[in-house]
Image (tube, rainbow, N blue to C red; front, side, top):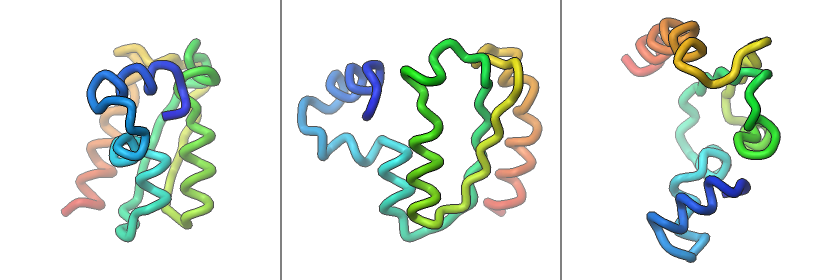
Length: 101
């Protein structure tokens, strides 16, 4: 909700009512969640969109405030390419298998 891409997409899908957007914003969801399923996020620190569009620090702040179990791993030298995804997908599959079974 707090970046130009998100605002454009949410407006396109849901209209101008920002309250309706909360159900699709990860920072809002962790802040209001009663379930505390562990969350794993990998983010490349060399991503050109990191500060202006992706803003993982907002998810980290919301998780900390809500005592939500977040592991945010900043991956040195990575952007958000297919190579980045391929490099860490195995960790995510194992993580979800562990926590969702």
